[in-house]
Structure formats: structure tokens, C-alpha cells
Image (cartoon, rainbow over all chains, first blue to last red):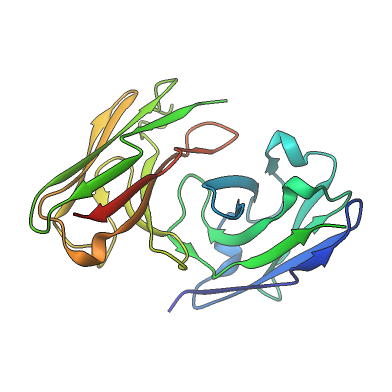
Length: 116
Length: 112
């Protein structure tokens, strides 16, 4: 069974940093592109970032470019999202999802709240 | 960015009746590899999204056959042949052809 488990969310002040993690199991993690999608409270889905299997390609939504980085450790089946210079509008539930052009498996999400 | 526009944004359906959601993209979603990367997701309240349809019309494993996807170019549709109580929630289309990936606004389906 494919499983994606996110962690690392929490309350942080504007300008602060947070590192999200996603641990994968049940499939060959190193064979898949991986993606982060977020959902602000009561709002729709927003794609955030995607990383290739070997991390040679990374893509970001414009609103997080220069502030967020995405990385992966295929030996540990883990995906990370390093979020710096956080803003109030980064507040959201962050999902880890499998795939590049579509996402067939999603985690349960980890909540990031940016507030003073 | 490719704008994905869903309609309607809200849908109230009688159990057993059909439902249809439209998704229009601001650019054609046909890719140079011959595929069209348009997906549909369903999100129940308090749950993570679940993919129903990928590449316009391919149904995911375990998805009931009352769900079907169709369309091409810039115009796509998700149809539910007979709505059941478990179908309530928000439905999103998503394009996976261009960067950045973009989602529709979502369509909230409720039972009348």
C-alpha cells in the first residue's frame, strides 16, 4: 500500500522558517517525481513544488520562488520542503503527493500556520 | 499561467440523478508526447484529495464506473451517472501539461 506521511508543520512567526518532511512507503520512491500541494483554510488546492527522481529538475510556483526549496533523500524515502521568509499567506495544509503531471497518492497533510 | 475555470462552483443533486462538472483551460492541454494531462480529484470534508480520473478519461483503480471523464483541447467534463451520498464534497480539475501546474477553483457537490 502506498503511504505518504507528512510532518514538521506548526506555528511560526512571519519571516520565520520551517522544514516539512514526507516519508514514503509501499512503492519505489526513487522512481517517482514528487510534489507538494497546499490548501489554505477553506480554500482550494494550490500546487507548490515538484522535484524529479534524481533532483536534477525542480519547479516552484512563483509565489514561493527564492523562499522555498525542495529536496529528497532516496536512500531514506523522504521528501523535504524547506520554507524560509514565511508569510501570513503561506498558512495552509501542506500535502505531499506522488507524481509530476498528475497525483495518484496524497498524504494526510501537515498544517503550517504563519502568525504573529 | 494556465487558468482552469470550473463550472458550476456549486451543485445540488438529487440522489440517483446525474451530475456534470465542466472544466475549461486557457490553453490547449495537449502535450508534445501525445497525452493530455487533465485530472479530476475529489475531496471529502476533512480528507485529503483523491484522484478519480487522469489523462482526461482514465479512471483510477477502485473508482466506481459511474464516474467518467471526457473532453479535449481546452474543454473537459466530469460526469457522475447516478449520484450517491458518498459523492458529496469538492471536485477539482488540474492540468499537468504546463508549469506551473494549476487547479480549478473547485466545485462543491451536495445532496438536495
